[in-house]
Image (cartoon, rainbow, N blue to C red; front, side, top):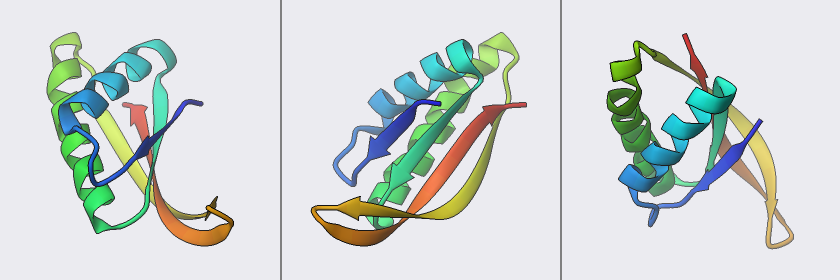
Length: 86
């Protein structure tokens, strides 16, 4: 499964394009986001991606969960957004 790392500076439209392409190819993709800004950009990207794929009769489902990531030698709690085709 492909993992997209999204930050607060990520462009939602660019992330949405990546989500749409990966959903069409692999039926699922995951996003890792740390912090409120990154989660905000991720959710916007998922909404835009839904618009991109709905012309192909694809509905996206998002399942959030907590994960622990090591960033710069520190353990950080992040959100994992699993996006799948319905």
